[in-house]
Amino acid sequence: MFSFKILKKSEKSKARLGVFSTPHGDIETPAFVPVATRASVRALPAQAIADAGSQLLISNTFHLHLTPGEQVVKEAGGIHRFMNWNKPLMTDSGGFQVLSFGFGREHSTGAMKEKQGERSVDEKTPSGIKITEEGVEFRSPKDGRKLFMGPKESIRIQEDVGADIIFAFDEATSPLTTREYMRTSLDRTHRWAQVCLDVKTRNDQALFGIVQGSEFDDLRSESATTIGAMPFGGFGIGGEYGIDKEAMAQRLALVTTLLPENKPRHVLGVGHPEDFSPVARGGGDTFDCITPTHYARHGTLFTSTGRLNMRNAEYVHAHVPIDTECSCAVCASYSRAYLSHLIRASEPTGMVLATMHNVHYFNILAKKVREQIALGEL
Image (cartoon, rainbow, N blue to C red; front, side, top):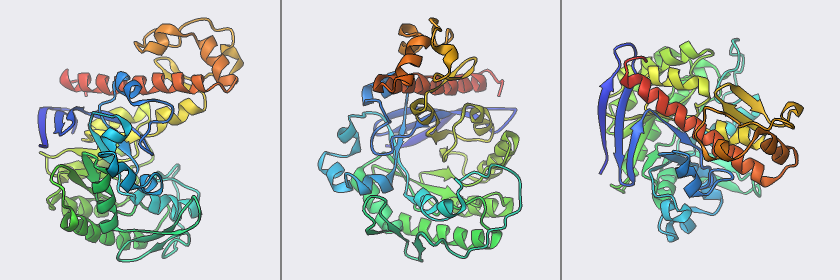
């Protein structure tokens, strides 16, 4: 039902070409994974996502639990039927929300450190959530009611949702937390990983364990060794990857060297254009990010000549293709002037067309990475 075949390994790096087979089709790797948070890639129907070359999507367990609720998705026959997506699909575990509603909110930071600096934050636990051995107590961002999610609850929700690939419940930590806190968090994440394996019941879903450890290479190595020894169908790699791209590739390579070679690896929350090569060189097979859709909503297009902010006045009279090197339907049919008009006028069509282009552009970038590996260039 699931298989991973390595087609070629680079002689220059940890990069590799592969095919990951799932019940809903094959994924050529390395592959970029658009984010469909609430069973939807923002502004695009399923067919448009497929037409843009997407092989795989990832949805958010926590947000699907909030709305519409996993039972609604289950009643529809699972998430594939619910959103009319007939290709492979992942759901994360909800572990990222431990960061975003906890230390991430308190530290005003995401999962990645933006600059070098001391780790001066020494809290023992975030105030916005309550973390226990059994899981995490949240407050609903919708109505403030108490919600609880732990490894048992996360797996139950993900099984009801029905994605092909699901993730073990973990704690995504702030890049500003101390080594002491990271040590405690990592031990708990490893215990939760075993609980997820113990309670999983569906054989038609591949469960991925998650490696954490932030920027502490010894803790990352320990996590990779511990999680890699467990009988997971694949592995997620999370946490802080380093300030610069070379550090990212090296830190990923440190982890992937310790993971079983014959299983796929997903790099969580990474996917700016400049990340594609380092992720592949570090041994990542799939990787997800909100970048193409997030930037499209704000009027930014990614092109072969760089980013274009379509709100800028210079594009108002630019009656030329968006990107002459792009093969997407948007570039074939519309000009920079027209996209600029739509986005400056806040017309919804502008966001749709910008998202179509950006997702296509990111998938083409991933295809080029595969070609570079095949040619022995990466």
